[in-house]
Image (cartoon, rainbow, N blue to C red; front, side, top):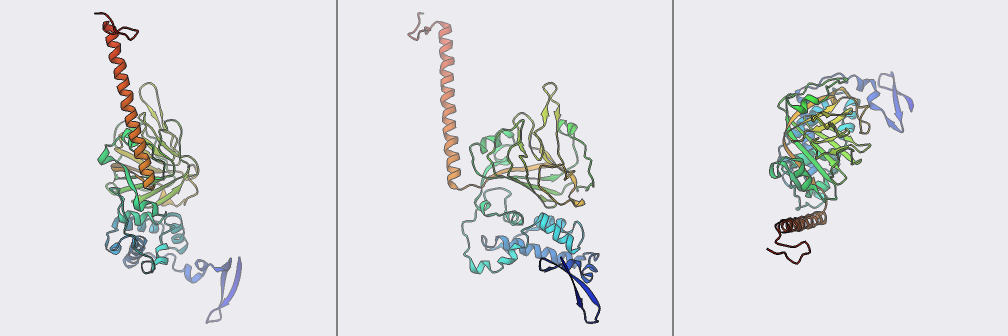
Length: 385
């Protein structure tokens, strides 16, 4: 790092700090003088317009009316994320890098629609995987695979149950997205709430009851039952609303239980006592926990130093304890057509095998009854009446 002296028009010396050949503008006194200036209505409106433009440009290759779509939920989350700590240049940069690293990339593609052909094959099969949501996801990940995603499971269509998720994701060997949509709610009653650990935050953020809540979990591993041990060490968690936060796993951190323990991210599977059904949750510093009925869930950011995820911002605004009522749960497959076809073939084969085994069992049970009645002999040649 170098410190250079520069003369201004009044012959006063100003220190200019250069690091790796780049001037650190945020360290200049004239720039720092704006650090404590609060964002007025016009400033916030300007940021909202900038975000809308970036979201629109992120999907304009795939849809003609990208600039006419309503992105209000996504804009609200992103503005809340960026403005949560004020407007200093360094804090603004940190928030963009930590939570929306791809937000401004569409600006580099401003003329992309003129240079690249439109893709007429845009198709989103998910109920909630809308164009605005795709645009928001584009701020943190590559959405190419999501453009032709297929809804493997939808709670409103297939039933809200763990077994239904297992049935519809079975034999699917490609990347998936678990999308959870709901509303922030007060803590309720019942065993799930009773046994859930108390929240002891470093800094607590007060959630607003009734606000939209949405999360996306991108899994790069096939779904499977995991009652005692986590799986999937290549996973990305994106809190989409009411604010945006992105986390990448540094170890296996997903569990999916079929013995009444629900599903979760960021903590080991809960323990269930053999007598009385008591559940012992083993929460880590950052965790998403969904109850077995898929009706309610909890998203908790309590201690970033004790988590299964890589480094993240320790900003006070990320801490919180959000209870929410679930309105929709979806699992979207991101594989190609061959992946879907292979899953369909395997599921059909398993159904036929199940029918064959059931028929064989029915035959054996029927024969046992005939043998008991003496109608059929044990040797298989018939019996006397």
